[in-house]
Length: 313
Image (cartoon, rainbow, N blue to C red; front, side, top):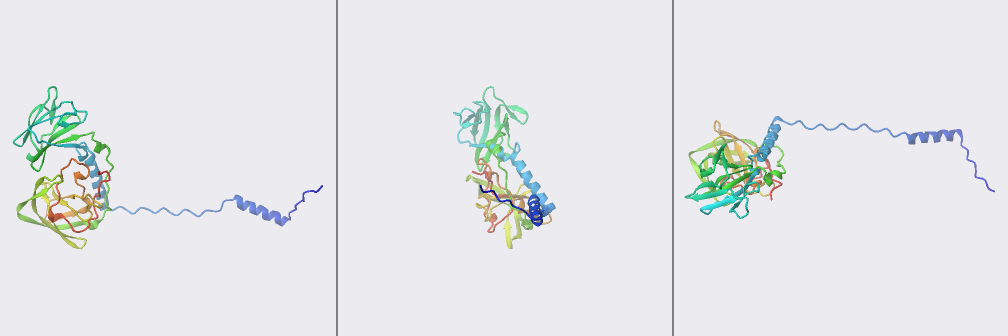
């Protein structure tokens, strides 16, 4: 029978085989990992803007923020019932009594009467019957019922009931805001020129009602190589710019954005478009935001401030 051949190795062959096995068993030396890139230092100005953005979100989501507004009901008849029963004229969330009360409209003024067994709070005092001041007369009378609150809101000349619900769907489903990168070129110093007398400007709001705004003067500044003139609204403690630009309807909310500044000092106003924010209407269909006057519709892109809200339907 045939035998299997016997293989022999020379000493050199054995050494070569041993070295090959050793090379296979030892992993190749790895190159040292490159050092991780350190993030660029954040400037004091960028820190300021980030803080502003965080405070903006906190304001939206707090108990009295715009995300808790849960209804807007226009009063068009002398008597309007309200409660959680679906047969009421104004249907409230299920947490409310089935029949909570009635609103009465006479000569443009609103009063309310609670149903028997129902008591509202006006501040910290019980309230069941009487006239309630609207926000067109100054701070409105806000009536509280558990987690619900309501008051008379004037949209132009039309009285309505604005409802706040701490448990509103909009608040629970808030997805957060988004912003353009911080850019100091959008922080400018404007020259302020007061008018001889405050100008009253009538502008439509987003529902088509007419709001009257008080414009104390105008500002002039240069942005992206263009000379810009805008008119603020005097809000007593600050100035309020309602503006639209060429990002509106694309990256930003279509109707307008809002920008608040300190009042003028020594004929100047510091305007920082990195702090431009969406109006309440961007988050809430029950808001009644004014549209920008013609002077504040800017023919340039303002790529700074808040972008359109991702949760807007």
